[in-house]
Image 1 (spheres, rainbow, N blue to C red):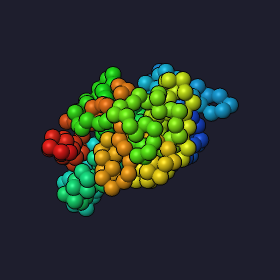
Image 2 (cartoon, rainbow, N blue to C red):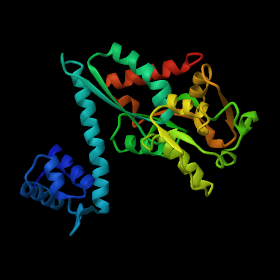
Image 3 (cartoon, one colour):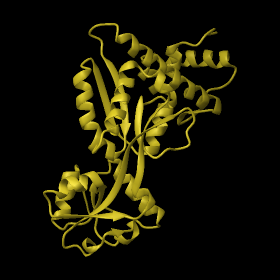
Image 4 (spheres, one colour):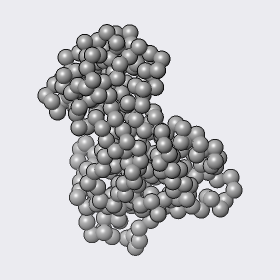
Length: 302
Protein backbone atom coordinates (compact mmCIF):
# COMPACT_ATOMS: atom_id res chain seq x y z
CA UNK A 1 0.00 0.00 0.00
CA UNK A 2 1.25 3.47 -0.86
CA UNK A 3 2.30 5.38 2.22
CA UNK A 4 2.45 8.76 0.53
CA UNK A 5 1.23 10.67 -2.49
CA UNK A 6 3.60 11.31 -5.35
CA UNK A 7 3.43 13.42 -8.51
CA UNK A 8 2.97 10.34 -10.70
CA UNK A 9 -0.23 9.51 -8.81
CA UNK A 10 -1.47 13.09 -9.07
CA UNK A 11 -0.85 13.26 -12.83
CA UNK A 12 -2.39 9.83 -13.35
CA UNK A 13 -5.63 10.68 -11.57
CA UNK A 14 -5.90 13.99 -13.43
CA UNK A 15 -5.36 12.26 -16.80
CA UNK A 16 -7.87 9.50 -16.02
CA UNK A 17 -10.46 12.02 -14.85
CA UNK A 18 -9.99 14.23 -17.92
CA UNK A 19 -10.20 11.28 -20.33
CA UNK A 20 -12.86 9.39 -18.31
CA UNK A 21 -10.85 6.33 -19.22
CA UNK A 22 -8.29 4.34 -17.24
CA UNK A 23 -6.67 3.13 -20.47
CA UNK A 24 -6.23 6.58 -22.00
CA UNK A 25 -5.17 8.03 -18.65
CA UNK A 26 -2.49 5.36 -18.34
CA UNK A 27 -1.28 6.03 -21.89
CA UNK A 28 -1.03 9.76 -21.27
CA UNK A 29 0.87 9.08 -18.03
CA UNK A 30 3.24 6.70 -19.88
CA UNK A 31 2.25 3.78 -17.65
CA UNK A 32 1.08 0.29 -18.49
CA UNK A 33 -2.58 -0.38 -17.79
CA UNK A 34 -1.85 -2.88 -14.96
CA UNK A 35 0.58 -0.42 -13.34
CA UNK A 36 -1.92 2.43 -13.57
CA UNK A 37 -4.75 0.28 -12.23
CA UNK A 38 -2.59 -0.85 -9.32
CA UNK A 39 -1.60 2.73 -8.49
CA UNK A 40 -5.23 3.84 -8.42
CA UNK A 41 -6.26 0.91 -6.21
CA UNK A 42 -3.42 1.55 -3.77
CA UNK A 43 -4.23 5.25 -3.71
CA UNK A 44 -7.90 4.57 -2.96
CA UNK A 45 -6.91 2.22 -0.14
CA UNK A 46 -4.50 4.80 1.25
CA UNK A 47 -7.13 7.56 1.10
CA UNK A 48 -9.92 5.32 2.36
CA UNK A 49 -12.32 6.38 -0.39
CA UNK A 50 -13.14 5.59 -4.03
CA UNK A 51 -11.96 8.11 -6.60
CA UNK A 52 -13.71 6.56 -9.61
CA UNK A 53 -16.86 4.62 -10.42
CA UNK A 54 -16.18 1.98 -13.08
CA UNK A 55 -18.72 1.19 -15.81
CA UNK A 56 -18.86 -0.24 -19.34
CA UNK A 57 -18.24 3.20 -20.88
CA UNK A 58 -15.16 3.91 -18.78
CA UNK A 59 -14.84 5.67 -15.43
CA UNK A 60 -16.49 8.66 -13.81
CA UNK A 61 -15.24 10.70 -10.88
CA UNK A 62 -16.85 10.25 -7.51
CA UNK A 63 -17.33 13.35 -5.32
CA UNK A 64 -14.10 12.32 -3.58
CA UNK A 65 -12.40 12.04 -6.95
CA UNK A 66 -13.55 15.51 -8.00
CA UNK A 67 -12.16 16.98 -4.77
CA UNK A 68 -8.89 15.07 -5.23
CA UNK A 69 -8.42 16.35 -8.79
CA UNK A 70 -9.22 19.92 -7.77
CA UNK A 71 -6.41 19.83 -5.21
CA UNK A 72 -4.11 17.83 -7.50
CA UNK A 73 -4.34 20.52 -10.18
CA UNK A 74 -3.34 23.15 -7.62
CA UNK A 75 -0.36 21.07 -6.51
CA UNK A 76 0.77 20.53 -10.12
CA UNK A 77 0.43 24.24 -10.85
CA UNK A 78 2.57 25.04 -7.81
CA UNK A 79 5.17 22.53 -9.01
CA UNK A 80 5.23 24.25 -12.39
CA UNK A 81 5.68 27.60 -10.66
CA UNK A 82 8.49 26.13 -8.55
CA UNK A 83 10.22 24.89 -11.69
CA UNK A 84 9.71 28.27 -13.31
CA UNK A 85 11.32 30.11 -10.42
CA UNK A 86 14.26 27.69 -10.38
CA UNK A 87 14.73 28.08 -14.13
CA UNK A 88 15.68 31.70 -13.60
CA UNK A 89 18.84 30.44 -11.91
CA UNK A 90 19.66 27.97 -14.68
CA UNK A 91 21.05 29.33 -17.92
CA UNK A 92 19.40 28.13 -21.10
CA UNK A 93 16.18 26.79 -19.55
CA UNK A 94 13.01 28.58 -20.58
CA UNK A 95 10.03 29.64 -18.49
CA UNK A 96 6.49 29.25 -19.81
CA UNK A 97 3.31 31.26 -19.18
CA UNK A 98 -0.17 30.16 -20.25
CA UNK A 99 -2.57 33.09 -20.76
CA UNK A 100 -6.28 32.87 -21.58
CA UNK A 101 -8.16 35.99 -22.74
CA UNK A 102 -11.42 37.18 -24.22
CA UNK A 103 -11.68 38.46 -27.81
CA UNK A 104 -10.99 42.14 -27.11
CA UNK A 105 -7.87 41.44 -25.08
CA UNK A 106 -6.64 38.97 -27.71
CA UNK A 107 -6.95 41.42 -30.60
CA UNK A 108 -6.42 44.82 -29.01
CA UNK A 109 -4.13 44.56 -26.00
CA UNK A 110 -2.08 41.38 -25.88
CA UNK A 111 -0.19 41.56 -29.23
CA UNK A 112 1.66 44.78 -28.35
CA UNK A 113 2.25 43.95 -24.70
CA UNK A 114 3.53 40.45 -25.49
CA UNK A 115 5.86 41.78 -28.18
CA UNK A 116 7.39 44.12 -25.61
CA UNK A 117 7.49 41.49 -22.86
CA UNK A 118 9.06 38.76 -25.01
CA UNK A 119 11.70 41.16 -26.30
CA UNK A 120 12.75 41.75 -22.69
CA UNK A 121 12.43 38.10 -21.58
CA UNK A 122 13.98 36.02 -24.34
CA UNK A 123 14.11 32.89 -22.16
CA UNK A 124 10.33 32.85 -21.67
CA UNK A 125 7.63 31.41 -23.94
CA UNK A 126 3.95 32.37 -23.82
CA UNK A 127 0.91 30.34 -24.83
CA UNK A 128 -2.04 32.66 -25.58
CA UNK A 129 -5.53 31.23 -26.11
CA UNK A 130 -8.94 32.83 -26.61
CA UNK A 131 -11.80 31.77 -24.35
CA UNK A 132 -15.09 33.09 -22.97
CA UNK A 133 -14.62 34.89 -19.67
CA UNK A 134 -16.31 32.26 -17.49
CA UNK A 135 -14.11 29.56 -19.02
CA UNK A 136 -11.03 31.69 -18.37
CA UNK A 137 -11.90 32.00 -14.66
CA UNK A 138 -12.59 28.27 -14.47
CA UNK A 139 -9.23 27.41 -16.07
CA UNK A 140 -7.30 29.74 -13.76
CA UNK A 141 -9.12 28.41 -10.69
CA UNK A 142 -8.35 24.81 -11.68
CA UNK A 143 -4.70 25.55 -12.39
CA UNK A 144 -4.99 25.08 -16.16
CA UNK A 145 -3.78 28.63 -16.88
CA UNK A 146 -1.37 30.97 -15.12
CA UNK A 147 -3.41 34.11 -15.72
CA UNK A 148 -6.44 35.27 -17.63
CA UNK A 149 -8.13 38.41 -18.91
CA UNK A 150 -11.89 38.55 -18.40
CA UNK A 151 -14.82 40.95 -18.68
CA UNK A 152 -16.15 41.70 -15.21
CA UNK A 153 -15.56 40.00 -11.89
CA UNK A 154 -17.24 36.75 -11.00
CA UNK A 155 -17.83 35.00 -7.70
CA UNK A 156 -14.80 32.74 -7.57
CA UNK A 157 -12.95 31.59 -4.48
CA UNK A 158 -9.18 31.90 -4.38
CA UNK A 159 -9.05 34.16 -7.45
CA UNK A 160 -7.56 37.66 -7.49
CA UNK A 161 -9.03 40.19 -9.95
CA UNK A 162 -6.76 43.08 -10.93
CA UNK A 163 -8.28 46.02 -12.88
CA UNK A 164 -7.09 46.21 -16.48
CA UNK A 165 -8.71 48.09 -19.40
CA UNK A 166 -12.31 49.10 -20.00
CA UNK A 167 -14.04 47.37 -22.89
CA UNK A 168 -16.99 48.43 -25.04
CA UNK A 169 -18.71 46.55 -27.85
CA UNK A 170 -20.43 48.54 -30.60
CA UNK A 171 -22.56 47.81 -33.65
CA UNK A 172 -20.95 48.48 -37.02
CA UNK A 173 -22.89 49.06 -40.25
CA UNK A 174 -22.20 50.36 -43.73
CA UNK A 175 -23.00 54.04 -44.31
CA UNK A 176 -26.22 53.30 -46.24
CA UNK A 177 -27.68 50.84 -43.75
CA UNK A 178 -31.08 51.73 -42.15
CA UNK A 179 -29.45 51.72 -38.70
CA UNK A 180 -26.61 54.04 -39.74
CA UNK A 181 -28.68 57.13 -38.90
CA UNK A 182 -28.97 56.10 -35.25
CA UNK A 183 -26.65 57.21 -32.46
CA UNK A 184 -27.49 54.19 -30.31
CA UNK A 185 -29.47 50.97 -30.60
CA UNK A 186 -30.31 47.92 -28.50
CA UNK A 187 -29.03 44.52 -29.55
CA UNK A 188 -32.53 43.11 -29.95
CA UNK A 189 -33.36 45.83 -32.51
CA UNK A 190 -30.46 44.68 -34.68
CA UNK A 191 -31.41 41.01 -34.82
CA UNK A 192 -33.73 41.45 -37.80
CA UNK A 193 -30.66 42.17 -39.96
CA UNK A 194 -28.01 39.85 -41.41
CA UNK A 195 -24.87 39.53 -39.28
CA UNK A 196 -21.18 39.21 -40.12
CA UNK A 197 -18.92 37.80 -37.43
CA UNK A 198 -15.78 35.96 -36.46
CA UNK A 199 -15.59 32.18 -36.72
CA UNK A 200 -17.12 29.87 -34.14
CA UNK A 201 -13.71 29.48 -32.48
CA UNK A 202 -13.75 33.08 -31.24
CA UNK A 203 -15.11 33.99 -27.81
CA UNK A 204 -17.21 36.87 -29.18
CA UNK A 205 -18.99 34.45 -31.56
CA UNK A 206 -20.27 32.33 -28.67
CA UNK A 207 -20.98 35.43 -26.58
CA UNK A 208 -23.32 36.95 -29.21
CA UNK A 209 -25.15 33.68 -29.75
CA UNK A 210 -25.72 33.45 -25.99
CA UNK A 211 -26.87 37.10 -25.82
CA UNK A 212 -29.44 36.43 -28.55
CA UNK A 213 -30.52 33.17 -26.89
CA UNK A 214 -31.16 35.11 -23.67
CA UNK A 215 -33.60 37.20 -25.72
CA UNK A 216 -35.30 34.10 -27.10
CA UNK A 217 -33.88 34.63 -30.60
CA UNK A 218 -32.22 31.93 -32.71
CA UNK A 219 -29.18 33.86 -33.91
CA UNK A 220 -27.08 32.93 -36.93
CA UNK A 221 -24.26 34.64 -38.80
CA UNK A 222 -24.67 35.09 -42.54
CA UNK A 223 -20.89 35.06 -42.95
CA UNK A 224 -18.15 33.96 -40.55
CA UNK A 225 -14.59 35.15 -41.22
CA UNK A 226 -11.21 34.92 -39.54
CA UNK A 227 -10.35 38.50 -38.56
CA UNK A 228 -11.88 41.83 -37.56
CA UNK A 229 -10.38 43.31 -40.73
CA UNK A 230 -12.46 40.88 -42.80
CA UNK A 231 -15.54 41.53 -40.67
CA UNK A 232 -15.32 45.27 -41.30
CA UNK A 233 -14.66 44.84 -45.01
CA UNK A 234 -17.72 42.62 -45.33
CA UNK A 235 -19.79 45.18 -43.45
CA UNK A 236 -18.47 48.00 -45.65
CA UNK A 237 -19.54 45.98 -48.71
CA UNK A 238 -23.10 45.76 -47.36
CA UNK A 239 -23.08 42.05 -46.49
CA UNK A 240 -24.48 42.67 -43.01
CA UNK A 241 -23.91 44.32 -39.64
CA UNK A 242 -21.57 43.24 -36.87
CA UNK A 243 -20.64 43.70 -33.22
CA UNK A 244 -16.96 44.44 -32.58
CA UNK A 245 -14.85 46.10 -29.87
CA UNK A 246 -15.03 49.89 -30.06
CA UNK A 247 -11.27 50.11 -30.58
CA UNK A 248 -11.61 47.90 -33.67
CA UNK A 249 -14.44 50.02 -35.06
CA UNK A 250 -12.49 53.24 -34.49
CA UNK A 251 -9.33 51.86 -36.09
CA UNK A 252 -10.94 50.50 -39.25
CA UNK A 253 -13.40 53.37 -39.41
CA UNK A 254 -10.50 55.71 -40.26
CA UNK A 255 -10.05 54.06 -43.65
CA UNK A 256 -13.37 52.31 -44.31
CA UNK A 257 -16.88 53.57 -45.03
CA UNK A 258 -18.47 52.11 -41.91
CA UNK A 259 -20.52 53.56 -39.05
CA UNK A 260 -20.08 52.76 -35.36
CA UNK A 261 -23.28 52.81 -33.26
CA UNK A 262 -23.45 52.59 -29.46
CA UNK A 263 -25.19 49.51 -28.06
CA UNK A 264 -27.43 50.32 -25.09
CA UNK A 265 -27.29 46.85 -23.54
CA UNK A 266 -25.57 46.63 -20.15
CA UNK A 267 -23.24 43.86 -21.34
CA UNK A 268 -21.88 46.09 -24.14
CA UNK A 269 -19.61 47.92 -21.69
CA UNK A 270 -17.49 46.21 -19.07
CA UNK A 271 -14.32 46.44 -17.03
CA UNK A 272 -11.60 44.01 -18.02
CA UNK A 273 -9.66 42.29 -15.25
CA UNK A 274 -6.49 40.26 -15.04
CA UNK A 275 -7.29 37.18 -12.96
CA UNK A 276 -4.78 34.97 -11.16
CA UNK A 277 -4.99 32.41 -8.38
CA UNK A 278 -2.43 34.24 -6.26
CA UNK A 279 -0.16 36.91 -7.72
CA UNK A 280 2.53 36.35 -5.10
CA UNK A 281 2.75 32.66 -6.00
CA UNK A 282 3.34 33.20 -9.72
CA UNK A 283 6.87 32.70 -11.08
CA UNK A 284 8.88 35.90 -11.23
CA UNK A 285 8.57 36.19 -15.03
CA UNK A 286 4.77 35.73 -14.89
CA UNK A 287 4.52 38.46 -12.24
CA UNK A 288 6.65 40.66 -14.51
CA UNK A 289 4.11 40.19 -17.32
CA UNK A 290 1.21 41.14 -15.01
CA UNK A 291 3.08 44.23 -13.82
CA UNK A 292 3.82 45.28 -17.40
CA UNK A 293 0.15 44.82 -18.34
CA UNK A 294 -0.98 46.94 -15.39
CA UNK A 295 1.53 49.70 -16.18
CA UNK A 296 0.43 49.74 -19.82
CA UNK A 297 -3.26 49.97 -18.88
CA UNK A 298 -2.59 53.04 -16.72
CA UNK A 299 -1.00 54.96 -19.56
CA UNK A 300 -3.25 57.54 -21.29
CA UNK A 301 -4.78 56.59 -24.65
CA UNK A 302 -4.24 52.87 -24.18
